Image 1 (cartoon, rainbow, N blue to C red):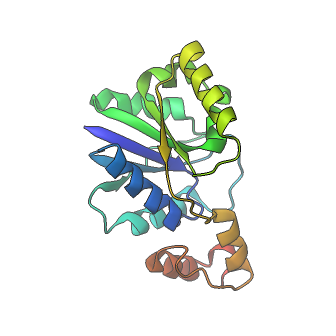
Image 2: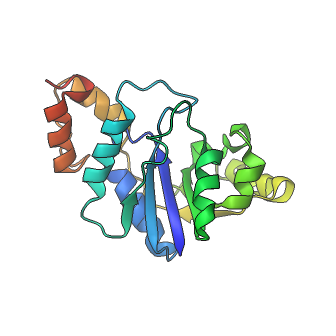
Length: 198
């Protein structure tokens, strides 16, 4: 099978994550998209537990049979690295496409054992139309392909101005996040008192 992977903290998962996954699944004719909430990411300290972020992702994707949520990273003890996850997933024999944003594209060289990762998965970079630094992106993609053997594809996606940071801020200020995240996720945030919501 051809499987897309949407990694990230999902803190919280929001409508743009879901729309991008659906858009790329269709454009690249993927059979499924795996959502992969990070456990204990090496570059961030998170105030919400991996279990709760996993639960929110499960709730948000439950109405789409082509979406599946994996707990590989949320159950892993210690720091969570993509190379460990891809080593585990690559045993299935499926064809993987890691979906990333332009910011992550420029961080790939800093990932642990990125040479190994490049052999286990392709990458799909979601680019917004009119992105200002387009030439910089193309140069980096060319460099990663030619020098390091990465398999990278570019996907033009609509511009979705939704961010988890903004959502957390809005919740802490008792502002509405309706239409930014699925209604059932809003209910979960309220029930669990996440992001300062009592």
